[in-house]
Image (cartoon, rainbow, N blue to C red; front, side, top):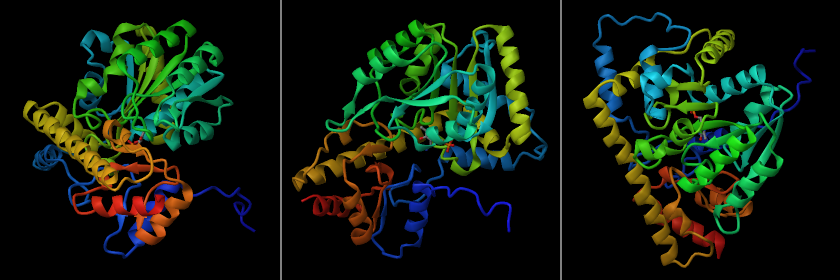
Length: 403
Ligand code: PMP
């Protein structure tokens, strides 16, 4: 009898299960609206031209080797990452402890571990709904920290439940609690707070002494504008004295999904605290991964550190965000033309790659079985699966399952 035969059954990940089902489907018109990966005009993976150029330059570098990165990660990546997300000066960075991680997921995970060790908050507040892995990560860290949700999404009207967010944090959160905030392009709703709303959340965090933990997985990818997408983080960083964490991913904005490049920042506000935090992060990371992978880190650092490549990268970001905006419009036009039942116009103004459709589980099942269109059971669609070739087909299928 195996030691592991009695392990509790773990549910398979819905998103990755759909990806496999889609791959196995041989129907020529199949459409994948489930994953959070950018797809080009022909629904294929896209290598950003800026990334391709950086890769070639690195290949031609005869001094390159395969040695370990330092324990905190590739230095040039860390510095560029700090500047990119915080718009930080050298002086600012003296109080930020940063470490390279296994992409955004690793940054979220290391941040959770760090907080469990460093502060022992009683509760972590996660938006309802949120990226599925937020709950999973905090559950598996198994720190005794209670997980609670704050309302974020008004399902009837497809708008943010801002009143619910603020009043929950105001009335229920306690000093030292962690609040997970999506810096931009909220996953799965595609709904972001306005600047005034961000200011109000910052005020509540200050008044109640909460610890914001920003998850920034879409900077530049969301709107094509790096400053706009980091506005929330920069506001908290420059205009409050809050200590906070930022999990920064380079998966979407560089199209480096499989390279797993990320950075975790802990904003400490004093140099002594920064040194202690750096020490703790190094220890935790050493026990998990020893050092982070170098290939993707070098690519990102190369692009961010070279004026021409950075300019090209910003053009690449605009290309992706424009394509998503135009597919949003194409889908909504096609649904409105058919007078498809449902609320669709919010899809025009949602930000990033996701939108909620309001489609119900039985309709989603029919979309998969009859039309070979794949989306998550929550009704979230990823806009990047849409192309000029399939958008009418998708709209027609949505129409058929809703009338
Ligand atoms: N946070 C959010 C909100 C995300 O949507 C994602 C990706 N789906 C991640 C983190 C993790 O990204 P990565 O692939 O960099 O681990």
